[in-house]
Image (cartoon, rainbow, N blue to C red; front, side, top):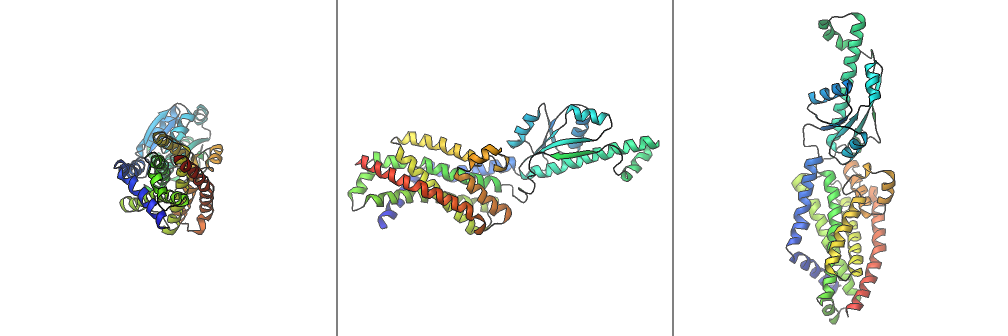
Length: 386
């Protein structure tokens, strides 16, 4: 056991001997948490709305939104608006079609389409949009009622408060699932911190797999095996080294974001178990990658590319709730997806260990599949190194 600990500790020291790793492991994740929180969080007092359509109704909607201090951008197509909202570049989109314009001009009821975003500020913007549209509907109904009654302009203002459902109505139909409850209560940095935590833990582990190759190239492995140390102890030490690196970064990010940005990680025991389980998957994946390849530079480059792709598919760049159904199925093959669901259960719904047992079970199962494969591949690579 002492040999395994010694090899694992040596791996950790070698990793942080490269000063650049301090930046990529400790500094860069925090900077991205800040950037994502400031861009997509709820720090701003006003939201951004994408308005699709042209005509009198669209102009009235735009003017009403601007009076509520919302930034309004005009777009030509509904597809573009959906993409902009999905990428988090706007809080909400409002679609006004030519049919809507025609019905509004004819004095008929209109049902506009609103596409809500996922960020916390987006839910406030949706509520503001609904209020603006309700005001337009009431005003139009008031004009219709006053015209029919022959009321003069001065009397109109006094009559507005008495108008209740007279004339055409303007209602809202939300597209897709209502994400207001799903993201309710999240702090400015909470969602981004959970996403970046999984991304960087996995990415650091994969890029650190190059150390396995360097150990063989520099003869470190040969010297270890020349001592009274078995191949199993060398493998155990390398696994421990990868695990400790990933776990250290994960715990650092959890504590750091909680202290610096007030991120709510919920039940500390449940969060710690998810971080440890994900560190196990990351370490096992690093063992597989580092044992399959013989070139350290190639392994580092592949680790970055593979880590980013898997993180994107697992919800570390875009919330799972915004994924299409087909991509949601694919994301279930990634550990990031299960970590994302576990953090969502803990942060948003106050879950504990019992609530995240399914996600923990999947992460442990992934580790149980990858770790023996990585150990077997590493044993083969050690044989080649000798």
